[in-house]
Image (cartoon, rainbow, N blue to C red):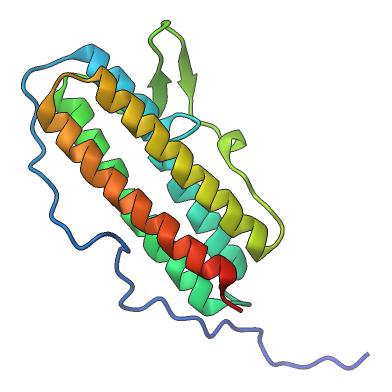
Length: 182
């Protein structure tokens, strides 16, 4: 067997990559008053099974597996992942303002606490299944945010959640376009 000294390389460059999100400003990060119940709800959005931490991790995993075979798709997924990182950061700030702690533990209303785990992720083998899983995760996040908006009586917090939903809806539109592209 002949051995070559040529290294294997990836030509996919992520230089200049920006978060992919709706071209709208975010409302100021503020809360009316400390509220541990609201902080606990946001902890679920932060690091629960359907959460920004799960989204970030899933997008980075998918991007990493696609970057050598489909650079344009990988760049889109990483751009969406960076937007999800921004959502994660905004939720963390709101949790702290509400008097909660950011510790990768989702705090449920029934008193249960659950540490984030990669078992929450869907890791399909092919690009089409990855995109479908990402669309489903975005839809689940939107549904959960809408439920939490109904449960939170702080308009400042809800304004941020509604703005995050706009990004998630934009992500679904982009992912659907990727699903039909050759």
